[in-house]
Image (cartoon, rainbow, N blue to C red; front, side):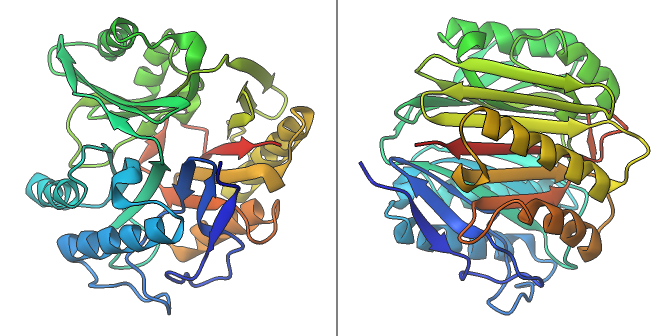
Length: 360
């Protein structure tokens, strides 16, 4: 078993100091921070050129994987955040990434409205596993389900078109197909749900009835040129999953932690309309900190943190909530990603934060 190791944050640079790691490996699993088309001085590579930036990031991923002790074929899932002007441009970037990692990892496409550095058009999160088996895609009733067996977990990327059906029906079809493939709600460890081409709040209400949704407030609205779709990136554990939830209605914080063996996944949102982005970030991070400690862990055990926030295309908004998030851990720090999205499931939520921790 490979002990925990860290790839230092030296592959590219941001315009503020960040106590995070480029990648973290624990045993057979690995996570990267958002891989960005930035140079070692924090300059944007090929500003405004999505394909050139996608190629640049793919090469960066291969370098980072090698430094973490993985091969390129260990890449099991890619969360691809991109800001494309047209569907054709988006398709070109997808084709490039698919060709570069042609062993069949899950490629989760997440169109965003903008990035925080002018001219930047793509950012990619990598989930890796040393023991990886790609399954053939499943298609039924307008649902596509891609699966990767990652050893102790099964990773899934499910999508259903909204053409001619309601969001509730689309989500229900996804749930039915997951069940047909032997994936049950009680084994769900982590989930990120997304919607394109529909009202986010309405879809969040519909998803609330689905057993595979942990927190509908964290639903991500996809920016143009997203197709009308309901989609989800899901992680299922092969060990029993225990759910610990704490809904604090006093300040609008909704917090859920799930434990499975030594792994902990936590998700937090805040719907207090009186708090700005930094204020909501602070309340969520404090809630996650309390929850981790109650589970016998701490932020020192966090290997991956992801923050989706709503806001403008400014460095200040990223750096402001980043400063709060980074105040809860020290170097070498987790692999961390934070970026703006078009919207969340609850219009009062400015940010949704999830963490993966592994406790000894």
